[in-house]
Image 1 (cartoon, rainbow, N blue to C red):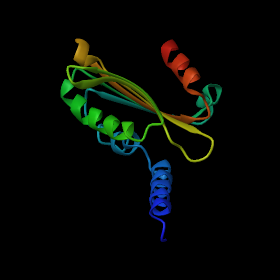
Image 2 (image 1 turned 90 degrees about the vertical axis):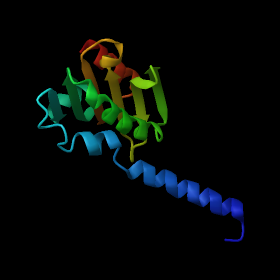
Image 3 (image 1 turned 90 degrees about the horizontal axis):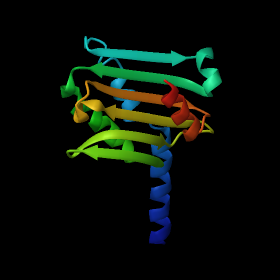
Length: 148
């Protein structure tokens, strides 16, 4: 390739394709069993027919209660996914990620979403991380989460 612009464009395209195929850090690191032996953690994984009304194929949730020391670890995973997000809403408090709603690239027609809320930064007791995949749009995901 003699054209440097074409080379740069090719590298950017290959990087984007690789990012789409990569599992989000929130899914790989958090729901691989790392928190299963933490007494303050509750992990929920739902697949199958229960999710069809919500147009989801995967729902994974982690809630840690009364253990704020896990915040920085979860924040690090969310921050890693934030770098590849195609859409994002974030709120920081005292220099730390308090809230994030991310839309991540996904191969095919489905969407990937990450919701993170660290209530311990505002005097609360819970840290919540939710990972979802499916055909639902971001507004229907937000509406579903507000109901629950």
